[in-house]
Picture: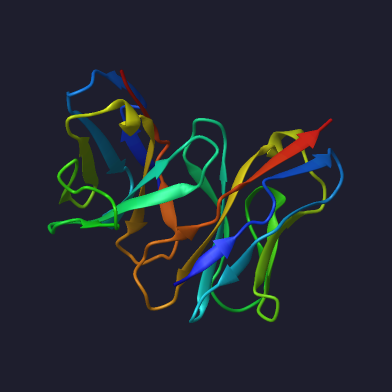
Length: 116
Length: 114
């Protein structure tokens, strides 16, 4: 149980375009989802916390107009990277917290974004 | 603010030997501590957690960790390493009664050689 999927697993886009990444909890409901960014050989940096039906809470230094987060249902959160730049290239990982209140987060497999 | 430190960038162990991956934490309240493992180009997999109770926590794949309040540590251990254990390991902390976000350590790369 407790499976989180991400789509796509890899995406290449051109500078200036937007790309959407989906995060789905497959067998549980998630009131809260988290979006992380990971640079090569680096730790995970929390970008934002996404709560179902409300606005996401962004961490300091993360541009909310650039990284649009929508948590429209208890099983789906999306991250849209708008007007992508090469420096946005990274590994984006989402996680979800079970509505039943368990303490651990379940992580998706990640999405490799390359902006050319 | 809560944080964790993983002092080692890399740990090298021969297969069959015991392994330890170190983690220390700094929090102002009661910590919830977690270990995750990440294989190349993959997301994080949950290994184990400490919330309360027995200081020795047993997790997936034969891993265990010991919560030591006096030393503010939560080291990950395994009695006999496997080559397949080679991966990136992350320690994370959440403070009880705070938000649900986790603060991760920088990660420790474990290399188990045959």
